[in-house]
Amino acid sequence: MSESSTVDHPTRRVLIVGGGITGGVLSLALAQQGVSVVLVDLRESLGGVGHGITLQGNALKAFRSVGIYDKLAERSFPFSHLRLKTADGHVIAEIPTPPMGGAELPGTMGAVRGDLADILAEEVVAAGVDVRLGVTLTDIDDHGDSVTVTLSDGTSETVDLLVGADGIRSKVRGMIGIEDQPRPVGMGIWRTVAKRPVEMDCSEMYYGGPKYKAGYTPISEDLCYAFLLEENLDRSFIGEGARGSELKERGQGYGGIWGEVRDSLADDAVVNYQWIESICVESPWYRGRSIIIGDAAHACPPLIAQGAAMCAEDAVILAEMLTGGDPIDDVLPAFMARRFPRVKMVLDNSLTLAEWEIHPETEGADPGRIMGQTLHALVEPA
Figure 1 (tube, rainbow, N blue to C red):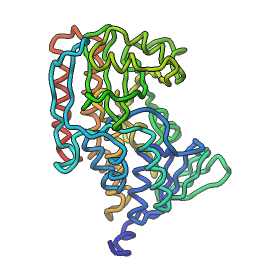
Figure 2: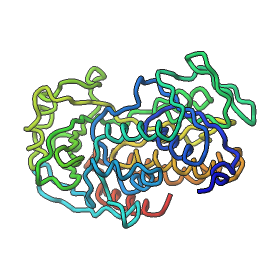
Figure 3: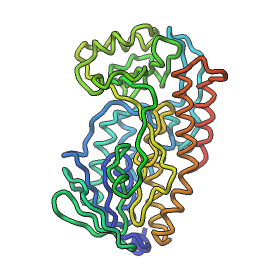
Figure 4: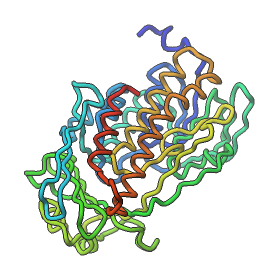
């Protein structure tokens, strides 16, 4: 790419709030096109925390476009199908994962969420992004053709665009006057990392047991990410700690490989419990020269494993549009118009699945059908 082609666009300097998947991929994509990027995050490190993550082909395509796919693939576990099972471990259906990222990429990949965060953090720094940690924004002053952002360390930056990539509890969202708030879906999720039984070769979901659903995804040669979905427990349950014995007790009533994984957990295994929440901002995601993307604008329940993919797609497409030569004030509405139908379809179908899992007696409930339809729709490029 010639030097001139990297700067022949109106976007010169962007400030991004939030260094997760959305903000990390956007920072990389913009920096690679010659944009000066300031990335701020309240945490003291962008490095990895968290459990496993299931990444569909369209997420992998986005990661490949910013050059991190190969490093992630070295540490991850690829597969191309999904199994639905009864609570005792008998196969109900096997769903091939369509090639959402193209024929040359796996249909799905399980990864350690912390590995993805570590790789992104390293690459963002290597790309020359100005990373400011332990910092948030305190004021936004929109000038029409630019925006001045005041930060909590007392400094300020005047940029062409402010991007809130700061997640479902976005601070930017409220500061630019978008009043939507996340709402509980009605289910909570227990998550842990465990040893991968050798026969586990793909994501599997167990239906019809004492809870809403149990399941797992292989995330490396040695590890898997196991989860249990049940009702929203009291808020006192929310959090992470040495709770293996608690998950073992709550996960009784499931057999097959899930039962093996459950029984293999140490009593002090690190387990996280959270309420599942969602948000879908239907009004414009932008106000002046500020925009929210990713989970700040559209966070879905993790029932189709498309959360990270929708975020990564947002980041790659926004960067592509911002550096395509069109004025920023035209890009923002065009970006939302391009993205909204796709993210709304994923969100609506995820909420339908949640409703069916909470009320499995619902007439016409068919989780396999809606999962398959959604994944096939996503074969269309973003």
